[in-house]
Image (cartoon, rainbow, N blue to C red; front, side):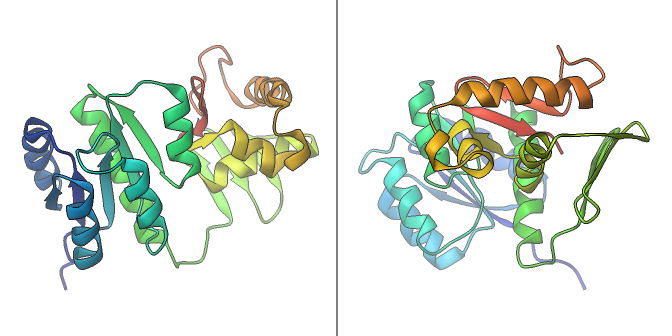
Length: 230
């Protein structure tokens, strides 16, 4: 029995962007639904139940953040922000309101398709039992046994280092904001003390990366947070 094709909703008022995205997504086996404004996006999202939403923040009738807040009221579908706005505050706000990822225009098609594939894997895994093991390249994390390996050798992590890593594992492939990491690892009282996060991320990279100066696993999203590559 063939699997149904995943539905991707593009919400963008620029026709050239939609023309750029649609054939590439269809070549990946997706069904593409388009919306040119916020109100149309809400109708399409409620009637077509997309697996992934590509959402522009600058819409003609309402802010993309409002669309995102509405979506998060009833849908867990991954949302990837597409925005010409490069300001860090806007990216952080979108991620804190429930976006799963973001790309700043202009972006490369191959990078977008890779992000969509990650989002589809997350969407398909929703509701399934979470795996107790994470592996990417030479990095392996066994959550059940609380053990970490790099290149086949076990790595000793402090309790805070391990908690930071497992928080990133829980959101693997997604951007995780500084604020979310501080809240999950250190607690509400430490939200402004992001220097702790930089110190512990540096320690993690020295233990888990072959070249800490050029990390393959623990990537920085400047001004926003970090991403654990899948």
